[in-house]
Image (cartoon, rainbow, N blue to C red; front, side, top):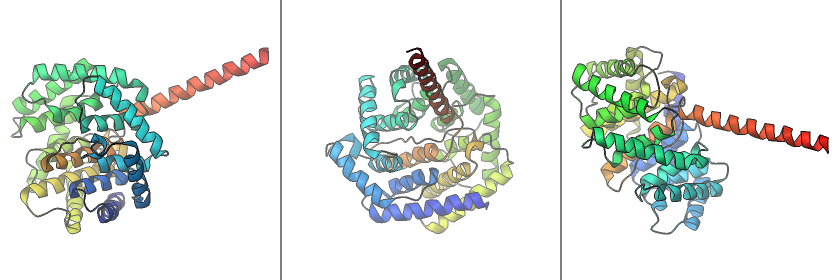
Length: 357
């Protein structure tokens, strides 16, 4: 195991342990997810500040509020990492109201979408993001009405935030689906393949080459008898696309991370739990490569009421808090740079005006 990966794994173990001791009544999968949020940020979980943020959240929201539903621990984690937690929750609430008016469903998905916009400093772009999001979902529903449902929202909001056009996104997703199912004839559920296509479409480049990269890792995992199957463990392989390393090395690191998580005893030794554990191992490996995975370094999560959906929350938190730093992070940096340039230009203008006076 590389030193970077070991450090990630050990930080995750400490964070999960600290959070689960103080938030023992939360679903354990959410404690795992919160631990990954802090790990993705390279921070030790600040339990005292988490509790302070819980008081702030209670102050700013009603008892039955969607902000205090399934997403609560993810929101508290993001508040804790923010420079100004109170301003952060105010910003999230403000963006949420816009999203709700934009015909988004009134549920926790939208809280998480609002969190992502705030994390990226894209609050002022909310209206444009709503328009692009709705167009993407409309096109996806037309092409794949059975496959497209509320579970796609988390990916689509990210796609709407990217600087890629709707046409290019839809084209890449369609090519990816057809290539994997018709050409490569992969025996994986269509929902999982669509999830993979949505993540891969976040970045430009040859979509078939990215699919081939994923399939090389997938086949190597199968050769090593890894329990991957359908679901999030397959879609998560998109995070490893573009890493400049051989599939054998990547898979070896995934298995080492998986063994580490097994030693932590966070997952029962049932088949479905093993697949989940493998998924987190994949995410920790992707995180250890940082921008090498050519994706995003921002938090976004999926949500729902049931335990099954709560497990999916952890998947999405992991993906968007640990990896993918190349796309939307770059967009955010560009936005900050442009803002800085505008402020600089305004300052120069003011100085010129002062000189004339």
